[in-house]
Amino acid sequence: MSGANEDIFDSIVVAEESFRGEGYREGFDRGTHLGLQDGRRHGVSHGAKLSSEVSFYYGFAITWKCLLQLNNDVKSRKHLKILEAFLGLIQGCPHEDQPETLTEDIKKLRAKFRQVCSILGVSSDLKAFMKISEAMSF
Amino acid sequence: LLLSVELLIRQLYLSSQMSWLKAASICGDDVFDENADEMSVMSKEWASNMKKRIRDGYVDGSDAGMEASLQVGFKQGYLEGAAMTAPVGRLKGMLSALYFWYQTKHPENPIPPSVTELLHRVSQYEDTIIDGTNKALEKPTPNVSSVSETMEELDLEQSVSGCCKEGCNDKECCKEAKKNDLNVTNTQENLSSGSSESLSCLLQECIELFSEFGLPQELIHHMEELKPM
Image (cartoon, rainbow over all chains, first blue to last red; front, side, top):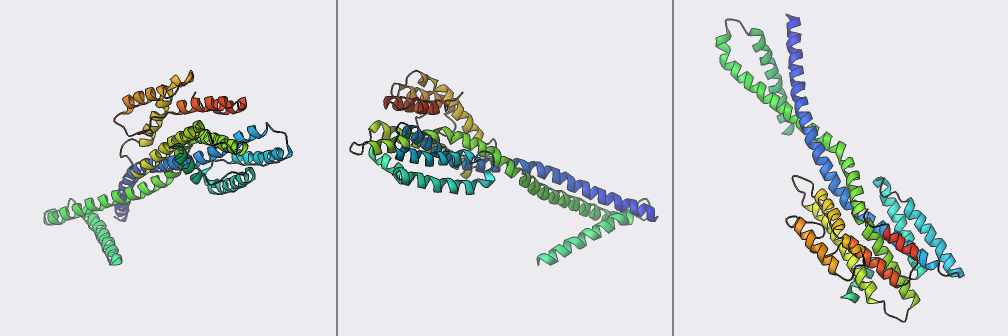
């Protein structure tokens, strides 16, 4: 008799577990789907913003580098060195592989960009600058 | 209150287990009829308990699935988003450098309007892309990810405007690109809605502008790299 009771207990536990498991699997699928979608949307938004900024720095730096290379004076060579360092920082910035270390990297890049701008004698306030160009052209 | 509710549930659950056990053990006895009402109550209890099991499992599974996939989705999206703005970001940087370089070199002259205008258009184009990703964030679409749709549209738009390859003489090809773009995506809210720009067109105009200024060929290469394959 006690053996039969144990069997029944077992089957209750098994039944409960299987019901729970059924719900779990369904929930897991749904959660995975939602998580992928949600994560992706946030990722796209973050990726677009950060890549826009980092790519901007890259375009800015390679252009200045090319233009400064046209000159051969001491000042241009000094500026070139700083630009090279900035470019190294940009290329070392793993903005496409490791979003985890991004905040630190981007902080460093921004600081370096301000330095580059002040040496080149240009405004590093790009938002203000974009507004100026807007006001000038329209 | 919460505690007492939980206690009650636990008691109910236990008693239902016990009654189920009792029901199972007396099954087949001649007292069965007397227990008929009790049996139906028991089976209802059993059913509601199992429903609760399923629900609990669902909630736990949903959380676990979400947790396991958020990061994966984020990384995937991150790469997609990065690819969306990388070319236009670089163009903007290059044009800005040209702008400041000109200013430093010719402080007495105003910046040529061709530079400021193109810079403005490039930066507006970039804004539409970023606004598009922000909109997707605010209003998630229930079925297919809107991001993938806008991504495809962007690709499409780029290939459609291949007319720019042979010297983009002013805005004719941009109009063409817009027309095609609207034909394809008229029902969808896409990234470039309200904008007549395409990356290929802007790119071509930038290349021409840099050539006009007689700037090093290396810079042109940096732009040509951005052309969609």
